[in-house]
Amino acid sequence: MKIGYLGVGAIASHMIEGFCGLDDRHEFFLSPRNEVKSAMLANKYANVNVCGSNQGVVDESEIVFISMNAASCPEALNELRFTGGEMVINLVATIPPEDIRAAIGPVRSFYHVVPLPFISRRVGPIAAYPESAELRKLLEPMGTVVFAGNMEEIRIMQAITALMSSFYEMLHHLTVFAETEGLGREAAISFTSTFFGALCQRAESFRGGDLHTLALEMTPGGLNEYCLKTLTESRVIKAWADILPSVMMKIKPE
Ligand SMILES: NC(=O)c1ccc[n+]([C@@H]2O[C@H](COP(=O)([O-])OP(=O)(O)OC[C@H]3O[C@@H](n4cnc5c(N)ncnc54)[C@H](OP(=O)(O)O)[C@@H]3O)[C@@H](O)[C@H]2O)c1
Image 1 (cartoon, rainbow, N blue to C red):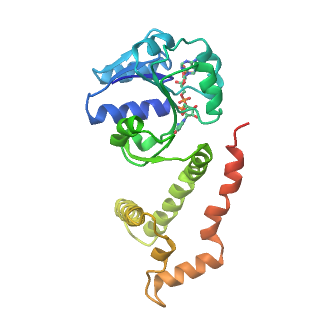
Image 2 (spheres, helix red, strand yellow):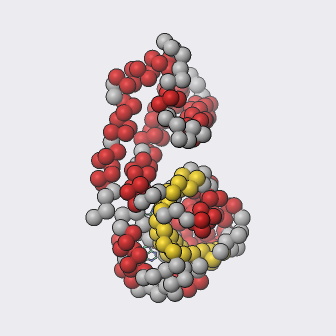
Image 3 (cartoon, rainbow, N blue to C red):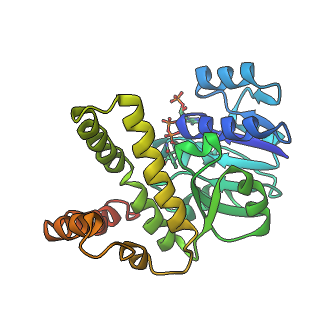
């Protein structure tokens, strides 16, 4: 497919790296902004081209990703002419998708997608709305596509992504503990990250089940029970979920 990106910043670069790392099944048409990032991608991949203008991107593409800063939308989009035959995928998180849609006018199909930086390695979740076979086909090689039933569900998934830094910080503290006790840094990071990765894989395969069941799979009176009880009593575990209503408020569309 011919795929265009309006805005080549952090997330567009991660997506293009992910697509191009897979194979060269798609051809890419990038906006001139950001000049450095667009040129870097075009130098690296033969199937990546930089257009002279945003309109050039639209003119060349069957699928158009809107990946510019919110501050540039919807003014920049108002200036563009779509033929009406494009599939448009909005990545802009902080503007109601209806406003983006109104700015571009009628198109063949319109989606809202939330990619995350590790899409560059084609892993992790990709939240998307609404569900469709064409969007699934495009994004499935890039990670785990999780379709939302409405935009509110997108917001719930977006809120959970706000815990990324806290999670890494928690892992950091565990590795600092391990190093302080005498384990080498490399072993500490390798062991801790693959341990939590394996726990998440187990949880993922438990689809439709109650994850609390996994928490109860422990030796009575054992070390896991000791940690669960102590951390529950100090409210540390539930604090992760308790912060999310305030995150939801912060990402509420105006
Ligand atoms: N980062 C993420 O993990 C993530 C995840 C999901 C969704 N998003 C959404 O994706 C969008 C981009 O995020 P980002 O993190 O990639 O931001 P970013 O790194 O700041 O990239 C935005 C890009 O848009 C370009 N741009 C600005 N005005 C433009 C215009 N009129 N025409 C064409 N390009 C223009 C900027 O170019 P200059 O550098 O020349 O100004 C910049 O390269 C945001 O709306 C964000 O909500 C981001």
